[in-house]
Image (tube, rainbow, N blue to C red; front, side, top):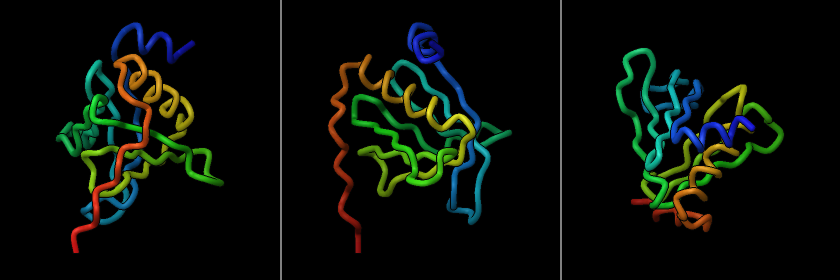
Length: 116
């Protein structure tokens, strides 16, 4: 029911830990879903870390053997993002619902080739 409310409202927000952020170690972030994008913003400053468009392909998965973590894949990312979040399954279901609502393909976003 929560997912339906988020989709109807066209917005959702979750607090999570971005694992192994560039600065080294975990970073507290807000995952902010709007009608078109998922924004990863650093807390408490709300500095944008990533802005990902649903139409470009966005998929969230559970981390095997860790129910409080999720993996986020997007065509705009060079590598997947891993988050720790107590509401991981709700985040995954919400990302999925927002993606479907936009008529985005639920096909796996292609991972870009690693630049060597």
